[in-house]
Length: 130
Figure 1 (cartoon, one colour):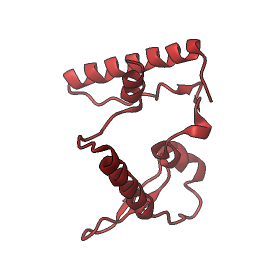
Figure 2: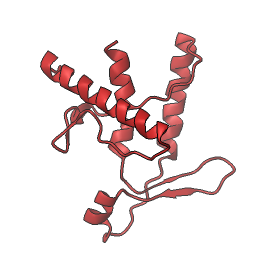
Figure 3: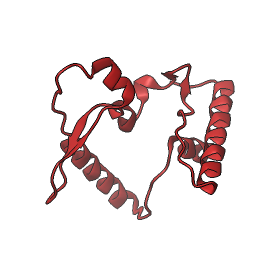
Figure 4: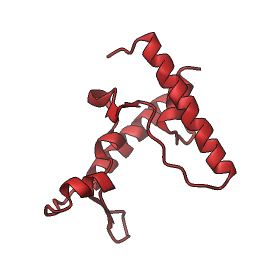
């Protein structure tokens, strides 16, 4: 899927707005919750191609780290409002994250990339367009 140049410019502009708001909140030592720059009218413009973190967002889950008790993550407010009355369906993210870590390790070895990567979607968009 390719976005038009006009749509790419709009996404980039929204990414800049998000990053500016994050920087301002950080300077003021405030928390900030912002919508992803790819979200338009409550819909992801790349929905069919969205990353794993977006696919899993808001779903109640479990995560089991070695040597530690399991962690239960609640669903987001929207999920809870729509589905909170239904019984919990166990969803253990551990195997998914373990497989992703193996893939990342293979890519790092193949590319000899050693730096840590921790970027927001806005940062990735701006990095790609620079």
